Picture (cartoon, helix red, strand yellow):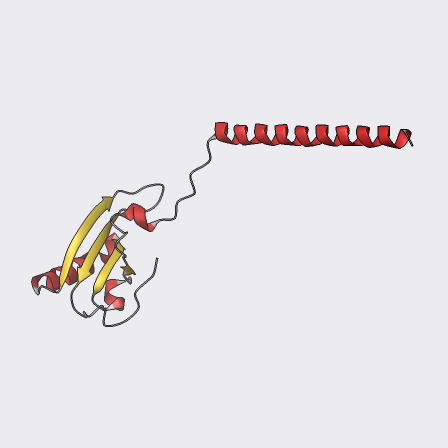
Length: 136
């Protein structure tokens, strides 16, 4: 996630979470720039309050020209949205999927068999060397 801090805001593709306190400024900004043909709203997702986090809207928008972005009025800076960002799910870090427990058990079993085979081989070698030493 990379915040775009260049001002004026360069032409590009961006995403942002719009919280209630920023909604009026955002609505005015996007309306003005859509009407002038310099910005386009690509995606909007609404999220209700969850676990103490306030409601907000996730937006992806594109600009075709450098645009004024008044940080002090907007209350936030937009994030650069690469082509892989198509929804809010694409902007959060997710844990790696956990491995299948049966697969892990299979690997453990293979390791135990391998260790057993090595131990058996060492026992045979020690026995052979003991027999050879006794015949001298």
